Image (cartoon, rainbow, N blue to C red; front, side):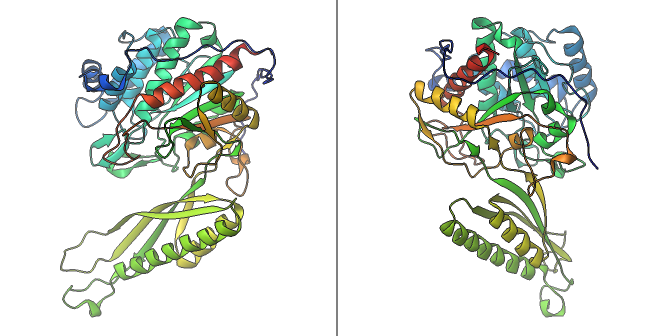
Length: 468
């Protein structure tokens, strides 16, 4: 069924010409904002306040959060006035507030109070219901550009959530930039929209207590709400720990892979483990499926060798069985995973092989398609700031894709409200000794904050001050 969003007056986007541009404002961190200050025990007071207010027990206090969010929207004032914090203090606070998809209540409350304390206006389209944890600041229909940021943390174990994907860094960068804009360029905040998106890691986990009923990650959720229909441009950034410290990844056109979640179920026949031949062990079929996935990855490599525009990877990340005794064969076993797909040949191969194996799949995110003019503008700003630019596409997937233009074979755009006509998603280095994304050794550093603040700040300044 075709869905349409209400017709809205979209402002004429400013011209992205390179001539007669205003001189850029330098968005640099203060000299004291150094890596060493991460050793200081900052952020504890604020984190304790918001955790106690909305998470007195393991369960979310939704009534308190909803009441406070509605108060913030209607009054235009923070529930708790917050002082300006350094990037390190922001990181420490946000890391202590780490929460799973669609349950980022303490995080959104802190972000909301911090921005309202800086003079930003909370938009009434911000979430004010259970599991609607997105927050929006600044104008939407009259914005020259929007900045998108992630809210959620990675689940590492039951009731243990950690910002090992760098989202605390992303938020700290946007909050730092927003604070600087409010002081240095107060007129800019009247033409800039900030969108904090929940559930970048996906639709949630049953173990965390909530999964989106339609399987939507945060980007698809916001697209379904029609949030992106009203925006002319959207910018976001993420850490890529593979990048050298002096390099950013800015790609024109296809900038990331698409991602598909897949599932394989194997039925067994229970029997005693001492007499396995009397039954059927479903793990035998799982083993065969894992071997087939390895073979599929080799086919993807062969495709890429003949056509560099193609890329594919399947990764089985979960294998388990239905509950059973160690002395019994399980009645069923499961394999779950995620894929990265670039190119129609790779997509056709992925679907045909999984269909033959009896597996199922669903789209998690289409590829990010960056606007060429925004990519050129960003690359110019990066080089002006002294960074090298790597234009190769990333092998990640990102929920930013749901904000922009996409089409078949990835997803049918007629099933959604219209999106933002021009988006830019780029990648910055993670900082020295930052570790690996999604790993226990990942550490938040200030270097990527510096890069994001300077580049996004420069881009937003160009867009908001460019002639119409």
